[in-house]
Length: 436
Image 1 (cartoon, rainbow, N blue to C red):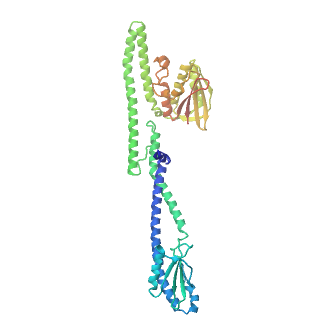
Image 2 (image 1 turned 45 degrees about the horizontal axis):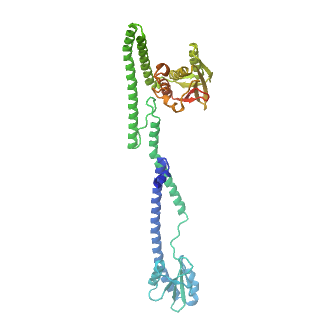
Image 3 (image 1 turned 180 degrees about the vertical axis):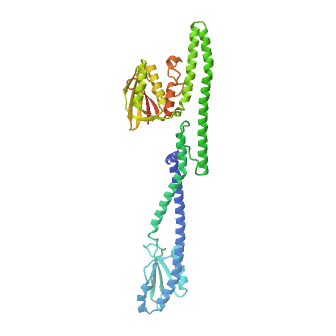
């Protein structure tokens, strides 16, 4: 469970995860490199400090030992260094320096002064890393060497350099991840918008070998899908054409038969077979609604004409609201969509209302409304699929073929729109087509 919780704390995007991994790895490597360099600098500085201490202290003590006693005080400031200074006197009381840096300093001083001067090195209590070396000059005057060992201080500009380096690490990691993820994002967007029936630009087959190969495979897959869809339409069209002749012959033979209930049933069945073949082909061809060239139409006049055609035949279709706006669309496909929706409303409610509105500035919403029984909420999406019928009697007269809404939905997608079904508050159905 703890592993799952840790996994959930990770960012959800691949880019963010790769960015954190790269940044963490480069930062750790940079810190380790800086640590190694700092350790090397520390060791070199310590070695240099001890070497200088050995040479300078030996020379300085020899000078002080040869100077007259009354002149030694004037020379002390000339002999002082950054890490140590000379004091004429017994100095401060301390504890013997044992181990670590104190022992190294004591050994260095004994080697520098030789056997001539007895040196005693002590740590000063209360002072951090402070040592004092006590000895007596030839005339017996006590001399104290106050030592504060330290390496060379860091330059004041070094933190700025480290900050700039860290910023470069962040920028380079972000750029590298973006460069690596961008082809994957483009591929995901192309897959999400995959529609073999649209003349979308092909995915660029450039970049690294793996990316170019994936783009080539995707383009080939889209071409194969488009080819299969085209074959499906051609096969259905051929079946429809080939079935026309035997269906017509069967109708003629049925017409020549004696009148009776069986004859009427046979003719009805043949009519239903013919209608089912036509609607099946219409659904297959609806996927290729973009084959029609787009043109500019006035949506108000277009819906007026469609509604008047229904009213001329005595159908209860009214236009309740419209807007006069020019849009670019495929008018024959749009007319087929609206006709299917209106026919659906007339079948189940006996009347239909059409309204046209402008939404979100440049978008047009066309609604076909009725006061029929509506559709259960959990079936609103299902009825847009082919051969789905809510009426289960299998009676073509009451339930249809289950292709009307599916054809409208497919054509809406083909012309770049969307079809949405909603139940109205006081009963009935609203079928809304949104166009850009």
